[in-house]
Length: 342
Image 1 (cartoon, one colour):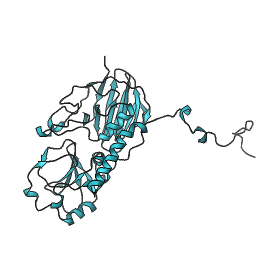
Image 2 (image 1 turned 180 degrees about the vertical axis):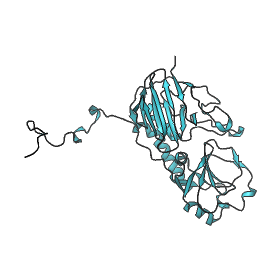
Image 3 (image 1 turned 120 degrees about the vertical axis):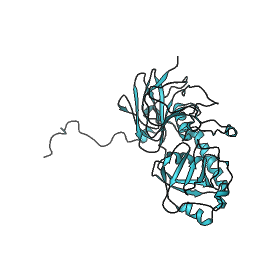
């Protein structure tokens, strides 16, 4: 009999997500999947399992959860206040969730999307090869209070493992390459685009993230004559009001707005995790550099399991134990430390 994780109280935008459904774009369905794919790889590394297993994606805040058997969990993505039966637990780490214990996850302290992984993944039915909810296409839906999710067979045992703290939260520099209509924008417009400090707008979801900014909007004289064509996650469309939108994993399959640039896939998690108001700037890189940056990112993904370390190190496993200053200073065996000096 498999274990179940029951959602006692669900946050406002909680879904089940994995790597999505590639291969259906010709039928009008984009891949979807987790807004921050890197978080899935981190959770997999912490639990010693494959990154294609489904996890709970929590937008902005979490909820409360109870399992009917002992299960392993991992918490990744945007850091959220979390505790098990009132005892605080570390984020970006794995833990044991005992049967009947209450896991409480609060609001995000940084970033936008937090992830709750379980050992073995969630064993919900596959729909077109994936378990992800695709809200824009009506596949699945928001997780609800009282819902019980089956947990798959867990072949791992390790808990209390952690990864170095990620640094993709808070916006920052986003690297882009030229897109289909980049040359349709004047050099002056492109220069203003790369020198503008944008702010992540509150108008953002799993389809796209709007960029707020000061000053005039961005436009090209050819934008009214553009024929709708294929768009992909990372494309930056300039809408009719002149605001750039970075398309995310639930974006439409085609679009007719001009695309001023395209975000490198390795930088898309940084866009997804930017909180409302976070400052973002864009920097063009040449295609050869973009390919090298993406290859380096993918190599780092593969190396994540080797970077996992115990939350509490066993002295027997510390090779350089003698280099640690375990005792400092000296004390007297006879003097009373509470006596005042005379």
